[in-house]
Amino acid sequence: MMLTVRDLHKSYRTSGEELAVLRGVNLSLKAGESVSLTGESGSGKSTLLHLIAGLDRANDGEIDLDGNLVSRMSDAERAAMRRDRLGLVFQQFNLIPSLSVADNLAFQARIAERYDSAWQAELTERLGLDPLLDRYPEQLSGGQQQRVAIGRALAARPLVLLADEPTGNLDEKTADGVLQLTCDLVARTGCAFLMVTHSARLAMMLDRQVHLSAGRIA
Image (cartoon, rainbow, N blue to C red; front, side, top):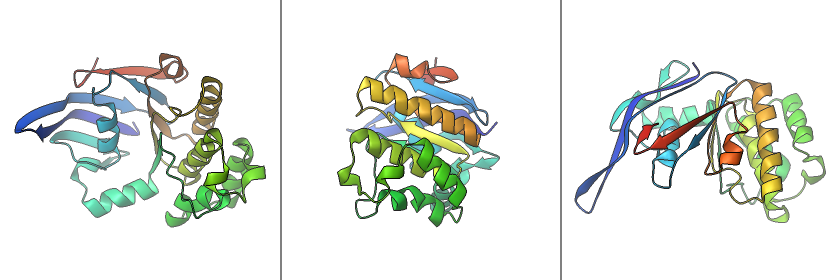
């Protein structure tokens, strides 16, 4: 398994009360597998992604990424894991405004010291970004920005790609096309792909669907 989550618990203290968000989540993904994660608002989907990415710490349980326990890593180790082993795509594209499309695409791969010009060229072609390489994010449409964000996340050949409502700002036709292209590229790299979505239509485009309800995988 590329990613294994075991009996994961997470709670927050609000107004003097303990609010349990995750109540013993178990989940696993194989290399090359794409999985959609659905659930009502507030069910803990984004919290789970943030824990897997090491952006927050669980109260209990384990997250195993390719044999490495994320839950036992220091802050510096978790930052290195995000840089070297994870691809992150969010609804807000988080492109760097001062960098061109070409430099945004290469950014994570370069800081991870895994830049591959041939793979960069393939991503650029598959994502239809060749005519846009000299442009800046503010000169792109929403769909174009999302394709750049996906390319940047995959450029370093991550072990796991995590996406939180990655097509939430796109119209239905564009969203379908972007997600299908993402799945094709995920299959090409062999990484595991976990996507949070509210859309049953988009969820069915992935290999497997799981549902989070009341803090547990239903």
